[in-house]
Length: 232
Image (cartoon, rainbow, N blue to C red; front, side, top):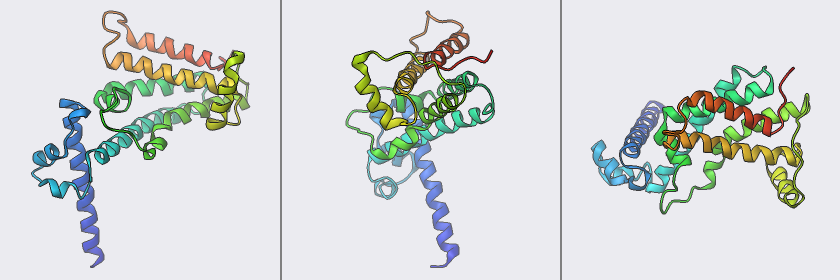
């Protein structure tokens, strides 16, 4: 096979893969992840099901690809926003990352629902999703690490009963950070996505009107909660 033929086939595969994912995302938006069907995707694309299976052997394989794409898109948005303020003080960097997460979620509500909404019945995410899923968390840990190595962080003391679990979490996620700091970060990380989820899924309706101002306040409080210090 000539290199030209091989290259054309590779490009065709990339294009078909992208078309399959785009149609799957359209179906996610219309019907939700639980109703995603390879046969329905193939039908809408004018493909026979057997041809689609050469790209994605099962619904779960397609879901996994969409989940990784969503996590990577979110991670790239957060990293891109952070790069613009990388030299700023830690609280500013933290809030910019959080704002980027919110902006991405509001612009991509169905993809956000895929990765942070209700679990898809019968689907269990494989380990191949972990690296992409960790991008935002690793970015926040990096901000804490820089602060810890600089002016320091003022983390609240741990309750005695939590220390063994806090030490385990720190050993897994960031052995170079104090257990109190990384445990507070995990709590703040969960609260960040809770705030975003409440807005995306409508739980703030008739409760919070100025959601931008509220979110800015809330994530600044999260920054203080993990011990980040404001510059005087």
